[in-house]
Picture (tube, rainbow, N blue to C red):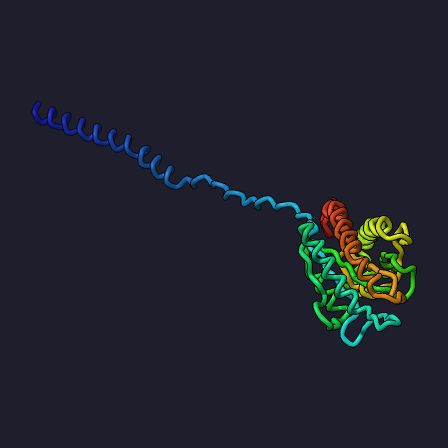
Amino acid sequence: MRIASLFLVLGGAVILLAAAQAQQVPAARSAGAAQQTPAPLIPAPVQVPPPQAPPQRATLKIVVLDPAHGGTDPGARGTGGMRESEMVLSLAAQIRAALEKQGFSVLQTRQGNDNPSFDDRAAMANAQRGAVFVTLHIGSTGLPGSVRVYTLPDFPAAAPAPDGLLAWDRAQAAVLPLSRKFAELAQAEFAQRFKGSPGSAQTAPVRQLRSLAVPAIAVELSSVSVEDSAVLEQMGPGVASAIARAVAEFKAVYDAAPVPGARP
């Protein structure tokens, strides 16, 4: 009886131990299976580029004044020794003062009796943002006391350059419509102030205008044929006021013009 009871107890212990081991195996396997399961992939955040600001429209703020000729080139000469190069330099000082009163910055292609090249004069204007160009002349002919404004004629059609760049001597072609609007505003101001001045601007192959990538006009007073230079000197304040008013009126047109290269 004791031996049988002992075997019975030992047998029960073995059964209980086996049952406990049997219960632990699935748990171990379950834990192992959990460790082997790959973690879910988390997509990397998408890099969204910051929004780009639309191209800024340029605002007209600079006027480049070009007193023509200079140095060894006196320009047109009058019978009394009058020199175009000297007269337009004096005129530029009056125009500059009138423009600065309107709040515009003014650059001059020459300050004294020098003669920058056509390309140097154009480069000064083309380096500016928000600029127009006004070249000043005194004609050898024309009704004394009148003023004429010129822009370039239409450019002949030309094949585009292989590199897509605009030829230096055709730079004005891209802004010619704006130049003509500027010219009409200026000519209207002169017609009101100076009797005999045309009612509309004209076209002429003015060399100074060809390489300019900004709106550009030529203003010509008549003329060095007057016997007394005081006739031209007296025109100075009226010419300065007319140009300042024309630039101020043209500013609204310029500021509303499409940005070159921008999509509408």
